[in-house]
Length: 107
Image (cartoon, rainbow, N blue to C red; front, side):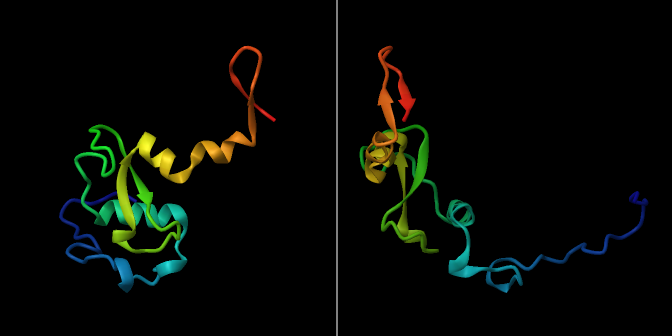
């Protein structure tokens, strides 16, 4: 379909149904990535890590461990602080080992 000059679009001036007004709204049943995207759109991004104050790449970290749709339940942390908070290394330690060349390998 080609847009014709002078033809008015069907949705000109109409705002889409967003948020709770949308028929696709899932609320607390939204997926992990959907909630993260929602928080990124609605929470002001911090200038530095909340824990160590490092400036650079920041990630959204969940505070309570229950992935709820609450903006105050998320904070911006640097990569290192986010990994430490989630105990990331403890989770993968049981799944990998260090080989004779010093590189990590899967078990």
